[in-house]
Length: 104
Image (spheres, rainbow, N blue to C red):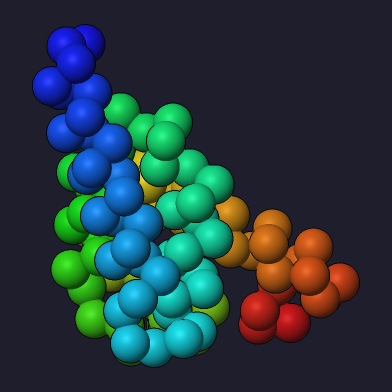
């Protein structure tokens, strides 16, 4: 990886981290932000593209999907990054509350 590509990647990750934490809805900020902080540095460009696309969704939809209040739309059902995001948030919820899942 060239120095320029490396810098662009670092800038992109910083931008995605910022976008994850400062969306406008504090609950969604936390769901996306903790995941982004824990995972983005390890993502390849394909995964970064996929995460960036997820960030284009509305806060309300993301919150409902990530808390399992509504089912995922078909295009996210077997989506690798969305699957990781869902698993991460369930694990994070269990760790911090002791409950099985946000819906239990």
